[in-house]
Length: 383
Image (cartoon, rainbow, N blue to C red; front, side, top):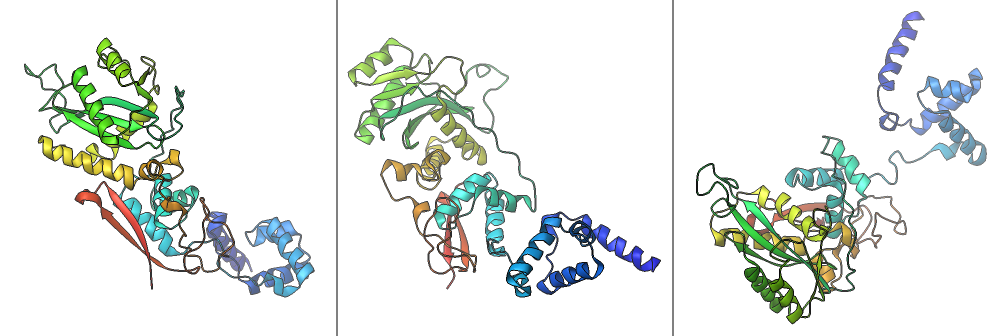
C-alpha cells in the first residue's frame, strides 16, 4: 500500500508541474468515474478536485449538469469549439519565421487581409509557443495640430539621412564632417495624413537646399493633381525660411510647424520614416548607385501603400483608404474550425465565412521585387 501511494504521488507531482490549461482533459467516462468515486467515498468537491488535479468549480459544474440533464450531459466533444487546427498554428509560425520583423498585430492584420481572421492575442499566444519574441514598443502619443477631413487635405513632409554600408562619416578630411554621398543618401518624403499613403519621395546626394525641396514638393503636387490645404513639417531651416513661406502662399498652402525639440510633433511622417528604415533600408544593403537605391525605395513604397496593413487604419492599407477601395479584411474569411457556427462572430473585423467551416488552406508568401523583407501574403483554400 505504501509503494502504491508513493507511485500515485510521483505521477501526481508530474502532472502538477504542467500548467492547468495544458493538462489533458478527462474523457466523459473518466468524468463519470470521478463523480461515482466521490459519491462512494463521500468526498467534498474540494477534496475530489485536489485528488484529481482539477478545480472545485469544475466538480460543481459536472454535478450541476448531471443533476439537470442526466449522466449523458457530460459527454462532450474532446476538442473545444474555438480551438484552431494545427494548420493555423503552422501558418502563423511560418509567417513569423519568413518575416521576423512582423509583430503579432501586423501578422493578424496581414492574415485578415488574406482571409484568415485571428485575434491579436491568439497570434501572440501561437508565436510564444516555440520562442519569445521581443516586446513591442509602446506607441508614442502626439498632439494633433490639424485634423484631416479627407485624402490630400493634410500632407506631411520631412527629410532623413539613410546611411550606406560605410556609414555616415569617415575619420579623414574632407569627409569627416558632412553627411553626404558616398556615405549616406538624403531622402525627402511626402505622406498624406488621412490615408497614411506615401505620396512620393526624392533622393539627394547631400542635404538639399530649400529651393530643391520646394521643387520636389511641386512635382508631388503635379503628380497627385491636387494641392493640400495644410503642409506639416518641422522647423528645419529648409522649411522655416521666407522663401518656403512665400512658395506656400503662392500655392495657397497653410504651413504648420511642429514644436522645436518636441518628440512626436510631426509623428505621422516620423513614423513612416522609422518604418521605411526598420522594414526597408536596414533589411538590405543600401546601394551606392542612385538608380538601384531608387528602385529599392520604389518597391518599398509600393509595398507599403498596397500590401502593408496600417494599425491606425484598422488593418486597411493606405491605398484602400486613399482610393476608397474595398478593404481586403472585409471580404469573407476562411474558417478552419470545423464545429464553428456560421453565425458566430470571428476576430475583428467580423465577416461572413467563405466556403464551409473546417476548410483547409495553403499559405503563399511572395516577395515584392524579390526583396525578402517585403512579403506579400495570400491564402488559397484547398480543394
